[in-house]
Image 1 (cartoon, rainbow, N blue to C red):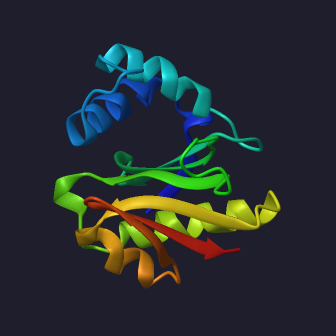
Image 2: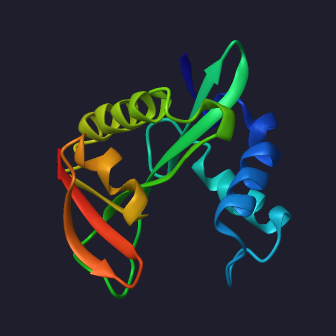
Length: 149
C-alpha cells in the first residue's frame, strides 16, 4: 500500500467526491457531487488543515482519510477531527483503514494536535477503539470518540 496527499493527486478529487456522496449522502452545504468536490478541494494541503490522505494499492486509489479543524456549535471543545475515513468495498477488512488512520495520527503529531475527535456509527467503534480512541458521547446512532495524541 502507498500513502499520499490529495495535494499531489488533485485529478482524483472527482472520484473521492463521488465516494463520499454515495457513502454519506447530500448535506445542506454539499447538495451535489460537484459541490462536495469543491468543498474537498480545501483539503488539498500537506502541512495545514484540512489535509486529505489517499491510499493506493497497485496504483489504484482505494481509500481516504482527513484531518480537519472544525468549529461545531454542539461540540465547542472538540477542535481537531479525523474524518472521511473511507476504504473502497473490495478492499475493506484488509488492514488498509488501520494504515490510513496511523498515517493521519502521525501527521497530527507533527502538527502538534493535542487530541483527535471523530464521529462514527456503532459498527465502526471497534476499529477506532483498537487505535486507542474512547467514546466520549453518543448522539442518536452516532458515537463521538477521542484519542489523545
